Image (cartoon, rainbow, N blue to C red):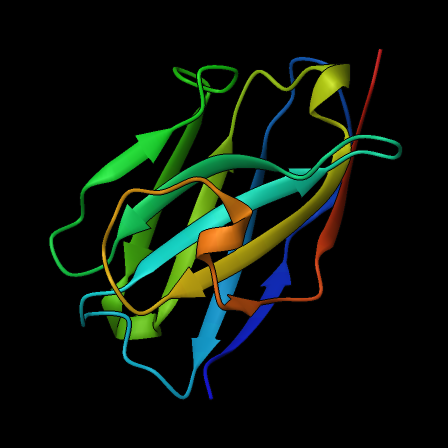
Length: 125
């Protein structure tokens, strides 16, 4: 079974940057897989942020993060990253890494089978 482990969360001021990491085990990232980042703020629904097809590298982003966030993969390290720049207080949430065994570009949580435990991101003014 695929295992995902997030890291890199923390507290930053608005305008700052963070890079989240999703370490993938029991699966090779270079194969065709859809790995995504989701986030969930208290009292809100889980929101798809960005996704990458690990085989071809195609990426998809939510409108709310386009131009600020970048998803990427390092096949050698079996890791997917989320570089977050120009962070805003509304980006504050628990961020989750998720995966499913086919490439679709989906950002719907129901389409993903494997989930990590999450890492907290807090952005203050």
